Structures are given as C-alpha cells and as structure tokens.
Amino acid sequence: MGDATADLDRAPSPSVDDRVRLFANASVFTARRDDPWAEAIAVRGAAIVGVGTSADLRRDRPSADEVDLGGGTLLPGFVDAHNHFLSTGESLASLDLRFPTVDSPEALLRVVREAAATTPAGEPISGFGVDNGKYALPSRRELDDAAGDHPAHLFHTSGHHVLVNSVVLAAAGVSEDVADPPGGRFERDADGRLTGFCLDTACGAVVPTDVDIGSHGPNFHVRASIDTLVAAVARASAAFLEAGLTCVCDAQVTAREFAGYREASARGELPIRTVCMPLSHQLGSFEEIGFAGPFGDDRLSIGHLKVYADGTLTGGTAAFGEGTGVATGDGSFFHRPDDLVALIERAWTAGWRVGVHAQGDRAIAIVLDGFERAMHATPRLDARPRIEHAGYPTLAGIERMRALEAIAVQQPTYLFDYGDEYHALLGDLAHDLQPYRDELDAGVRVVLSSDSDVSTYRPLTTIANAMRRSTRSGLVLGPRHRLTLEEALFAHTIDAAFAVGLEARLGSLEPGKAADLTVLATDIRDAGPDDVAEAPVVATIVGGETRFERHQP
Ligand SMILES: [Zn+2]
Image 1 (spheres, rainbow, N blue to C red):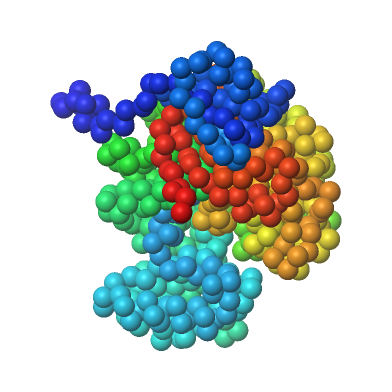
Image 2 (image 1 turned 180 degrees about the vertical axis):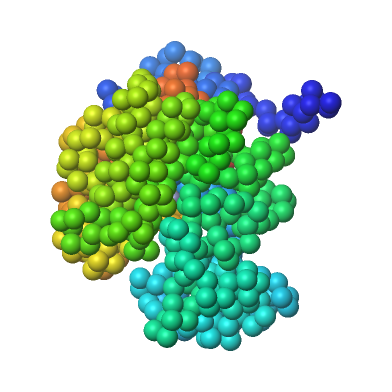
C-alpha cells in the first residue's frame, strides 16, 4: 500500500516557460545530416518548434521573445554515451591522483600523506587516477607509511585496477598465499610478495562493495549510504551541465547506481537525462521477472545490457590476436571465449540490446562472433549492438561491424591521455587504434564519448581530441583517422543519442524534439581543435529549462 501516492511525492519539476523563445544570432548546428547548419531556432516550453533562418522564424512568430546569443554557437545538448556518472561524482570528491597532478611515486605518497594527516583516525582514504604507465608505483611499505591506519583505495585511471595498503588487505582477509581469481590478478614484487596492486576482478576482494558482480567486470561499486550516492549524482550533474552535457549513459550499472539515480530523481536532483546500462551479472534476475531493456522515459531509462570481453588497453590487459606482436592469452578475458559468445546470445535472445566492452582485435572478433550467432538465431530489426571502446578493430572486424550495424562507441581523449604508452606498447599498430576513418568509410556509426572518469567528461575536449588525435607528447596517432569538426559533432550529438536509444526525442535540433541546448560564447563553425576545446559553455538547457548559466564578468 502507499504506492499510489509515489508519483505525488516526486518533487515537481520547475515550471517551463510556455512563451515562444527565438534563439538567434549564432551559428546553429542542427545535427541534421541533410541540413546541418541554421541561423536560429524557436522553442516553446520544453520543445523545439522551429529551425531555420532568423528572418523566417521572426516572420512566423512575431510575438516571440528573442534571445540574442551574441554571435556564439548553439548546439543540441551533448550526449555522453559511455560515462561512469555516479563514479565521476565520487571521483570529484576524492583525491585527484591524475597525471600530471601526480607524476611520480613521491608525488603519490605526498598526496596520501597529506590526506592521512587531515582524515579522522581509521577513516578511509580514496583517490582516483593512479597512472603507473607514467611512473612506477610506490612499494607497499611506502604506501603503508604514508597512509598510516587509514584504509587506502587508490583507483587506477582505467577504473579497472586499484592500489591498496596493508590495512585494506588485512581487513579483506587477503594474505600472501591468495590465489588469483578468474579474470584478475594480485600483482607481486620480485620476491613474490603482494604489492597491493589488484588488477581487474581481483579488485572485488579488496573494494568494500555491497554488490557481487562475479567475473563480469571491474568492481568499483564501493559501499555507500543512499545520501552519499545522491550527493555524488548531484555533484556530477552540476559538472556535466557546466560542460554542456544534457544526457549521460552510465555504462556499468548495478543495484548501487539504480538506487542512486532513482533516489536522485525522486528528490528532484537528476537534471541530466540518464540512461543506465545494467551490468551482465544481473541478467538472470531480469530473466526471472521477464524484463529486458530498453525501458523508461527520456529522463531516466534502462538501455543496453553491458557485457565485458577483455580488460583495459590503458592498464595492459586488452586481448590482441596473432599477427599484432602483442598477442595475449585467455587471462585477459572476463569470460572464457565460448562463455562470452553464449552470454551475448542469451541476453540478445531475452530481448536486450547488448553493448560489449572490447579493446583488442581478438576480443572484438569474439564479440562479433556472439553478435552474429545471436542475430542468426534471433533476427531483430533494431538490435543496435554496441562495441564499447573498439580500440583495435581490424578491417575485417570493421566489415563485420558494418554488416551487423554495430555501433563503435569510442573515446578520443584516451589517445591524448594514454597514447604515448599505447605507442610504446603497440608500435605502429597504435596508429590504427580507434580507426574513425576506416569505420566511417565502411559505413559504421562512430560515437564519441568520454568514459569519465577515465578521461575528462568535457565534450568539447573529447571533440578536439578526435580532431587532433595527438598524444600528450605531440605524436599524432593515425592522422588519416582525424575527424572534421562536423563529423565529431554528429558523433557526440545525434549518433550518441542513437546509441542510447533516444534519437527520436533528442540529439538534433528539429521541430518536435526536446529543447536540449548547449550555447557556446564563440562561433566554432570554422574553428580548429584548440579553439573548440577552449570555447566557453555559457548556457545548458534541458527540456527548455536553463540548468546552467555562466554569468559573464
Ligand atoms: Zn567505461
């Protein structure tokens, strides 16, 4: 009983102005392929009602209130199709261990020591962004000295690994004779002793979680109260709006994230449109109640089911095949290859759209085996299979992706943040990582996303990095795969909306669609990547409501 009043308890959304507003004096990117640029749009309440020239719109709606955009740029609100929303909120309140803020073991220890000095005795210390591709990790003894009696969880920048101190290992009951779990590893030093660095599924043993995800992915689902989860959602929402995002897809959702988003929504604290990709360990539970996505509305929905194939390129556990020079064994897989194919087929048959994390060509080939088997057994018109990251698809793999209409959901900022390490690891093969040009030429839909907090959630940085493909040291990886500004904008708006299943409601500026708008101070239509990256976001509007506004000095 009492459920009937649940909707009445929901916080009312702020009223949306019902006057017609005409946004003019800007370069307007519509994200319509047949007509990508316009001069102005008209908005009534929550919806777009007109797109075209300023003169036409003024003539048709003479009583409209005109909003002068000062010669800037108006875009559809950016859609981030692969982002760890709640984790990003947590990372914003944790120690920032990202490079170059932390660029040495000494710098890492210094940050931990300072945190230990100001954190109440015995309370945990948590940090995000450890990047041992750029420096050696401190020894476990050094970390123990720095962290004192505080349990310390220092997450790797990939989100797949965690460095912990002896306090954590002891509390978790992990001793020197521990065995590596399937799909994971406890790193050991030259003497065979645990270093405290736990890779992939080994994180599950040392991270205090309420969620047992088995060997279905890295477990960063740290135990937290509902108020802490809602606060993390609110913190990330504010940051996303300031960056121009209006819709974000969480690419790894468990009971913890569902609770956080549902409660934030109920309290009126979920201004960002949110799409959830439930992690595959929950498939059986969904099957029991006859549930499959997509489900929900354009505010909060369940989209694709998320499955993991291999590990992380950044953390060195991606699965490459023969002929690449970096072939890896089955140890990099979360599931045995046959089991992975069966899992994909099972989810597909249950009615799910499926998105699979796959980095190396070997992993991608097995995922495509799964999609092909599933499509053959249970043909579906609009299955929209997604490959998350798609780090190194071969030309043959790209052709198979085209035939399946599989979407490549990629992260160009990886190339900046980690590209130098990729080049050191893979040699010339690194030039064909995230091969946008080959994919587009073949007719594969390319989607740009952040994988925040692995890389920055700022869409303009993501777009600039797709245009540059430059590493931190200035090496350009595969210059022929660079995107034009327009290609990158499509990939972060309408094609991203397609990847999250909301293209009928948002992602482009067209009459009848939601008035999700991002306004930039400058005109980027002919801008190079540096000016794109620096363009200030001055307003972000979701469903006609201004949710962020930068007040000019
Ligand atoms: Zn991710």
